[in-house]
Image (tube, rainbow, N blue to C red; front, side):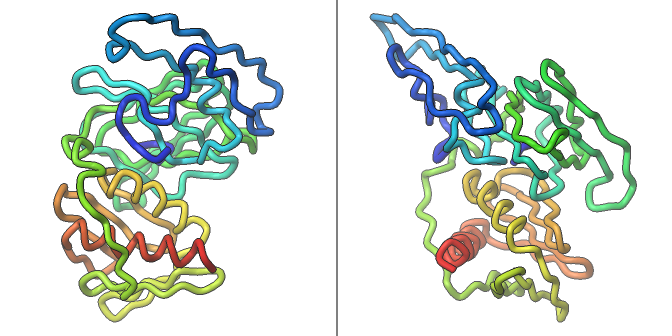
Length: 268
């Protein structure tokens, strides 16, 4: 996941059939003239898809850093991801293979570093029309290159657990506890307590991170959040860690805590 809708299957959130028109565009894309194509398929509609990536990614109501799958071919997914005017809310590491990212509109700086470490490898500064590689098992984080949103198309290796998304009931756990980890919300921070240590996570970035993790039910590899919490997916289990303490927990239970945190932050 790079820029880590409501669903993940092909066809979700598209609205691009014949006559669908062009959605209202976000102010960052007001300069674009978008004229989507038309679908005139009259038989076997389940075999066909047409989506305008620019119109989809530039829509005024499009959430940022929450990828949506627009298509799939065997073991590869095609994601549209609208990057925010600031940065990805965590350092992300993929473990399913290299990812390629195409900048359809805008500019991005993407930095690379050692997963879980401090060694930095440098960065790309990519602009409209650029296609670049995000290596497997290398942490990356994206930043806006010009202070505006951007529209990207990601070519992503399939994660075998994505097919399970939406098949399990996620019940909010208002105890705000997962194993030895507990969470407390304040106006500016979310405090994580674990292993006898407290870590303060900036609330806006924490909320943005949880929205992406919740949508993909934690199946986004390894993610290092601002403030020191890391979330590493192992399928049915997930490892939560802070410096000096780590615990592998049931993924569904952690999702319940994250859902409760999102609900609480949305209402306060």
